[in-house]
Amino acid sequence: MKITLAQTQPDVGDLATNVNNICDLLTQASEVQSMLVLFPELSLSGYVTNQRILEITAIAENDNYIRKIKQSCEQNNIDTVISFPEIEGQSYYITSLYIDHNGETLAKYRKTHLFADEQK
Image 1 (cartoon, helix red, strand yellow):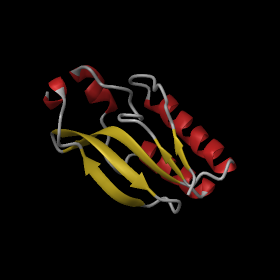
Image 2: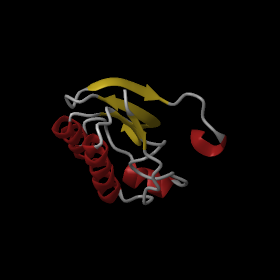
Image 3: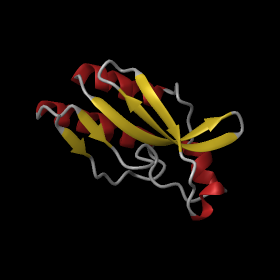
Image 4: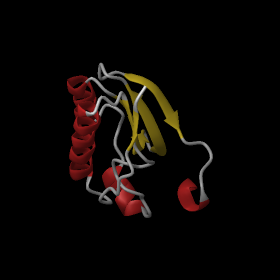
C-alpha cells in the first residue's frame, strides 16, 4: 500500500483555500498511485489559537467543505485522513475523519488528550 504524508502549511482561517489545496493534493497523490493521504492536525483550518478564529472555522461533519473533500476522494479513488475544528451544538472538538475512496466516512475521532490551552 502506498501512503502519502501531506506535510502542509494551511492558511489559518481560510477554509476555502485549504480545502482546495487538500483536493489538489488528493489528485496529485492519486496520479502516483497512492491509496491513502494523511493530513496534519487541523489541516482544514490551520492551527486555531483564539476564540474568534475558532468561531469562523469550526464546522459540522456534514459541512460543504467536508462534502467537497469526500467528492474528491471518490473522483480520485483515494482514501484520506483530515482534521478540522468541529462544532456540535455549543461544543467544539478537534476532529479527524477517515474518508474512504467511495467518499464515505469510515471513522471519526475527537481528540481527547488536549494540549495546553486547547481545552479553552
